[in-house]
Length: 225
Image: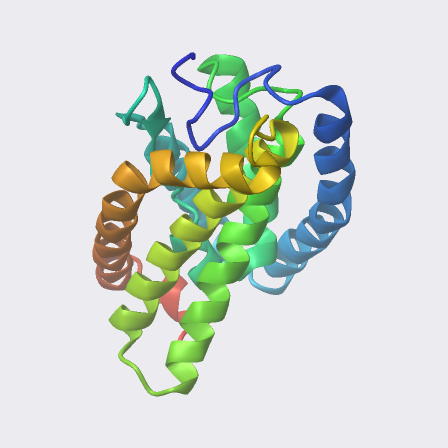
């Protein structure tokens, strides 16, 4: 099997047309939400433009760094946690779409036919889980760094679990069907994706602290507590 089949980006042509189309359709309402959220964020606070650009570059670079996994596969961080915490998950849907599109065209990482599926796992599910965990821990009185770390790590893990579901739905096992395939795909990802999620959580905390130090005015304009 090719190196990208089990990567966090599903490779071009690996999904049957019915599943590729399904995930494109499922993506559309979230994309509409994301466009509205991004436009509102920029309109209400023009200072966020530079931070949004930085988050987009951070996401592109981090998610493009593929690490070898097992059975000829690859894994990587998503880079979505920082932006989800700074701007909310809806903004990251648009940023994620742009990042995934450029990676598919320029790096052959992912694909056009699988763009809908990759957006759903990495740019929708991941950021919403990240933001939800961050808000929950914040409400519980946890330190901000703990919310950033746990939100980012669990958002990355949620992305890989959804990708495993997408692959299992498209390619159920002859013996055991969907469940057997999901267990196989999840197991392949887990070996590298669990430590990657931990490292990404730590890195996101470090980058957040750097932004608080060197882009204090822009960060304060986000009204982060």
